[in-house]
Amino acid sequence: MRFKPTGYTPFMLMAQTCALLGFACYAVVLTTLQDEWHLSNLQSGLIASAFFFGYMLMVPLATALTDRVDAKKIYLVGGLLATSGLLGMGILADNFWTALIFMAINGAGLAGTYMPGLKILSDRIKTGELSRHIAFYTAFFGIGTGFSYLCSGWILDGLGWRYVFGIIALGPFTALLIVLIFIPALTHEKWHGPIHVRLHDIFPV
Image (cartoon, rainbow, N blue to C red):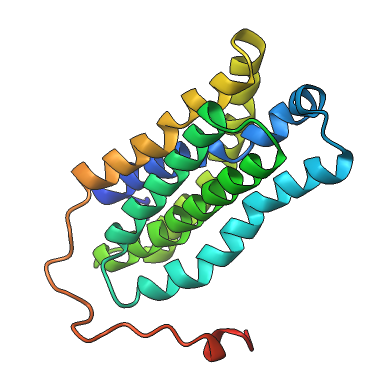
């Protein structure tokens, strides 16, 4: 049986690709920033790690919240965080410490879009084979990150490292707009009670 995507799947695939454009920005400009900011290898590595540290901190919160509220809301927050982190790197970052902050925000933004994007599909697809839709969505991770390296390299060669972050910030912002405009909100609320975050439940995990 031929796979037929729902009306939501193509939009989420486009959003997924756009949201991932900021994934490789720092990796592409790393050596340039090392020279300009006189960073040690340790400092360069810590900035790269800040992206994944922000991602790690955001994942359990964003994923847990999608069971309580519409994942679309989480996605919009994630897109806003990623856009802010990239713009901060392009406009405001001028040393090791500011780069740490903005890269962590960028990583948290990615966490707020990737898994919530899966939840957006699973909450709205009621017919057909959901596993195939999810397989297409996860496969686009490689496409999005590949475009991130490609586009970042092009921009760096032509305009400089600040433009890499500034222009690529349009990616997660576009993803935010796609979800905001083309993905309808759920017709029912998932949870009406208060939301409690219990850290003692997270630590064992």
